[in-house]
Length: 193
Image (cartoon, rainbow, N blue to C red; front, top):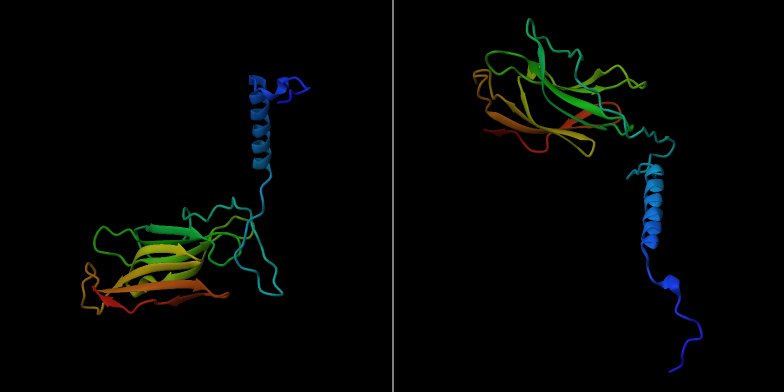
């Protein structure tokens, strides 16, 4: 066996200073990567001739506080029973769907479902669509927002003779933005409960 002409190298043994240097380098890489972030990804390409709009990810969805809903409640106030937020029209800004009814001490007041949005300047929450009209005497349950669509279960009545406490018809409903309005579809036929 031939002996090495070079003595054993001293720098091949790890010392505490080596670990401190490595830890400092890793911390620097992590700090730098947190400052540089990629843009948001989109799953679909915009149609030809249109320009994709993106908004900062920190845009808060419109809130329901202080909004005047188009609901006639008389001497009682309107109460937001449920709400869900998401980008329903693909413009990069979130909308909020609010299920609202009059604050009644007795009975089951009918629900209304409204879509809220903010102005382009980020202020001025306003109602832009009515998904469920309170005149229809429906109760909205299972409110969801998935894949830019609003889903809900609507509880209603088969006739005016059915008491308000006891809805006897259950209908699944879905609303989706078609570019000009929210279009309702009913995934399944109405069921009696």
